[in-house]
Image (cartoon, rainbow, N blue to C red; front, side, top):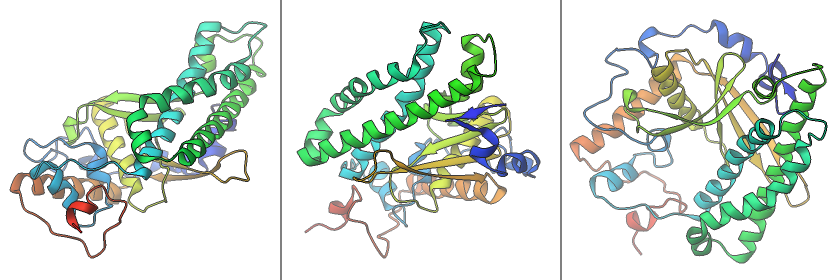
Length: 316
């Protein structure tokens, strides 16, 4: 039995976990396939956010970045997302490190360690992104994001400790590695070569192993229908690298409210179907062709002012 943030895996992921074992996937749409559908177009290898991101409906952002060589301006929502994502990515490794280094002794106190480490880690993350933080955020913004980062850290720390305590309560003796594999069955930012499917060589993938692989992603903005494409792309790259099927993904959306001491978390588990795989491949091919053929796809009907290319496409 595996636990994810204090819950049994079956409860955390719902009945889709069982259904994912029997889903029918076209062999030509597996990441390890040698089919023409999976093979990259030309010599174009794109970051996954470029392929999966459909914020610009015509993909003119891809044309401006890769054909015209215009660098996208960073925006306030982007840097806030980066800070929250880095917070999430540091929590699990910190918990695992304590378990491995400290061992299961009488003075084992993971919760106090995690709480004590939180503020220091958040200050490090802010410092590592200092230039963008100072350029894009007000003092009020910085105070708010620090508060939200700490809420996220403490909340996840408590959930991890709950998982660890549940496992510890079931075994008189357990080794650190076994404890980690049962209580924290998630690998954070695994490095995967995505070039086999037309993505960049240095992908960072979060994956649950319960025991079948479930690819995870955290999104800090408003939920979008195309967010599932990011997880689908990671799943294809994971399949290509390890030759194991990945049939399920899960997106986590944290939201923050001033009157709540913890984040409001929603989970969206889903099956990585043939339809999603085809849609991801179509987006990859569409954007690769824009680069190879150097054709400006033009402006979409509507543009978000949060787009890093808004000033380029709509000069005042």
